[in-house]
Every structure is written in C-alpha cells, then in structure tokens.
Length: 121
Image (cartoon, rainbow, N blue to C red; front, side, top):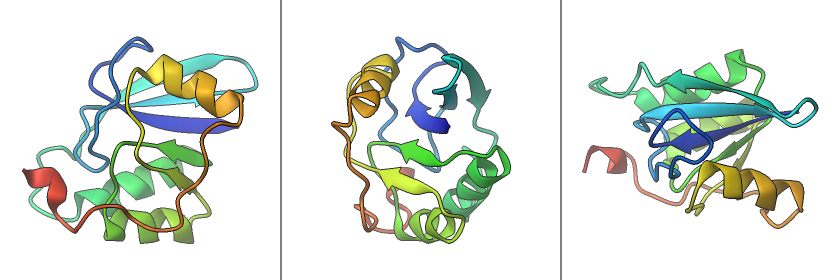
C-alpha cells in the first residue's frame, strides 16, 4: 500500500508540512517494501486549484492514504472521489507518522479541517 505524507523536506526525518496543496514535498511510502520516494510539489506556486491538482497527483501515483497537517475542502473532495483516505491533524516527523500509521494509531478524517485557500497564509 502506498501512503503519502506532506513534508517540509525530502527525507523521512523531515517535519510534516502542515499544508496539503502547498506542501514542499510529498513523501510516498510503500508499506509493502519499506521504500519511499520524495516528490517536490510542483503545485506549490499555483494561483488556484492547487489542492485539487495535488489530490489528482496522489491519485495518479496510486496513493491510498494521505497524512497531512491540514487539508481544505476541495482537496478532500478530490481525494475522496478517488478513494484516497485522508488523515489530517498530523505533526512531527514523516518517519514518526509512518510508524504511528503502521501501529494503527492514526484514523481517517471524514471531512476537511481548514477553509479553502488556507495554505496561502
């Protein structure tokens, strides 16, 4: 299973980026082989629709779960439509989030947790 974590850097020891659509990196971690890839977020400087575009990127990469600090309603709807579960409210390092997810300590959110365009601030 592939999970994606919003990250402030390209390493597992990087801090979770609290923004989804405008995060600096996505760390895509494969739970089956314990390998990961860091993807620089090309949507970070977009004028609008970055949550939707980032959600679509996750779907295109075959991600099943996204872990982030925050996620707006448009991104949430995009991922929900693609069958991607969102876990919001995450903080700490990417590695710690992965470990907590593997232990079953992180539960999916059933809605967005911030207003539209909140990542601009």
